[in-house]
Structure formats: structure tokens, C-alpha cells
Image (cartoon, rainbow over all chains, first blue to last red; front, side):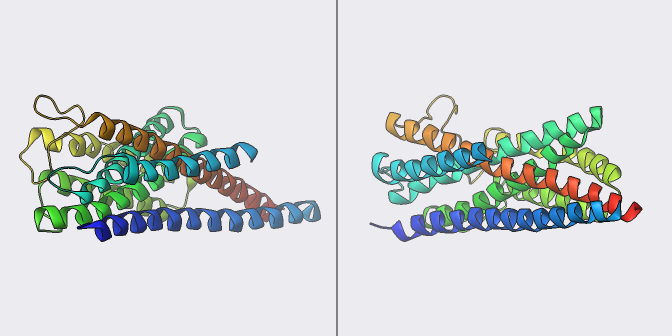
Length: 47
Length: 225
């Protein structure tokens, strides 16, 4: 089938972009979660 | 957390089902052939991106009016998610265009206004990195976001108002336009699936922004003690 490779390329690259975006959100979320834990542990010590 | 996992599972199942429908249920278009199947991904992503930018616009308007942080979180989440969807539109469009038009890109009204839309929301996100003070950052980016949203109806109307290389609308396109009923059903299912997936990304991004604000607040408390 003519151009089937282009269709697969569009779907693969498109879902690749979504996956990369989700990955950046997930990585930032886990970094902020770790930062929150660290800050919460520091607060009682400061008091 | 459980609700977010359920939303993720539903979104993944829906996009898998919509990909299956696009490849195996929708009939092959007569003139373009198999390449037309990009339509179900390309246009559905564009619609979901517009919805994300609309939610960003609502967040921006409400922030300017009510000055509550939650609206700023909605604004930045909608902008980032809408930008991801518009990036997909700008990549899949040329892949579809090349075999059909013989060119990857042309500066017609639809393509140019979509590229400008992408640049506007990149600028929105860049602007947020330049302003340190949270309230000032939220207000400035909200005002810019309200301005940026003006381009969304321009992108949508470009193929109705001007002569473009990009095809005329096939959904709500008036006389002489339209889709085969099976193609239409697969398209609306794909658009629904992409909207659920967009909602999942938006919820995740919103949760990140809320946690970031909480972390900033705690950091100031720790510093003050």
C-alpha cells in the first residue's frame, strides 16, 4: 500500500511527542515531590 | 490518585481503540488513499489542542478577574498541553501534505496561523520563566494568554475566509463538503479519545503546578525560620 510508511511515521512521531511530554511532566512531578518531602522534614526541625 | 489512574487507563484504552478504528474500520479514501488515515490523528489532535488553549484562556480570564492561583495553574497547564498537541499537528500535517501536495510546507493562511499559534504559546511559557515574582508572573502571562487566544479562531476560520492550499473543512463545511458516515463516526470517536487523553495530561500538569506552588510556599517558610 502506497504511503503506508508515512502514515506509520506520523502516528509514531506524534505519539513520541506525547510520550516525551508526559515523561517531562512525570520527571518534574517526582522532583517536586522529593523537594516537598525534604521541605516538610526540615520544617519541624526549624521549629 | 486512584481517579487519575482510572483516567489514564481510560485514555490509553480509548486512543488504542481510536487507532484501531482509524486503520481497520474507516474506509480508505478514494483519491488520497491510505495517507488520508492521518486525518483521524491530525485533526483530532488539532481539536484537542484548541480545547486545551480554550481552557488556558478561561484560566487566564478568571485569573485577571479573581486573582486566584488555581486559575493561573489552569492557564499554564492548558498552554503546555495545547502546545504539545499543536506540535503534533505541525509534524503530522507536513507528513500528510508531502505525498498529496508534493511539498512539505507552504505559507498559506491556515499553516502560517497555526505556526504563529505555536510561537505565541512558546512565548507564553518563556514569559513565565522571565518573571520571578509569582503574582506578577501570573498576571502578565494571563494578559498575554488572553491576547494569544485571539489566534485560535483565526486558525479555525482561515480555511473558510481565505483561499488556502490546506483543504476546505469537511466537518461543518457547508454545501459540497462532508464525510462518509463511517469516516465521520471514526473521526468523532478519535476526537473524543484525544480529548480524554488531553484531559489526562491536563490533570497531571495541573497537579504538578499545584505541588510546585506548595513547595515554593514551604521553601519560603523554611527560609523565614
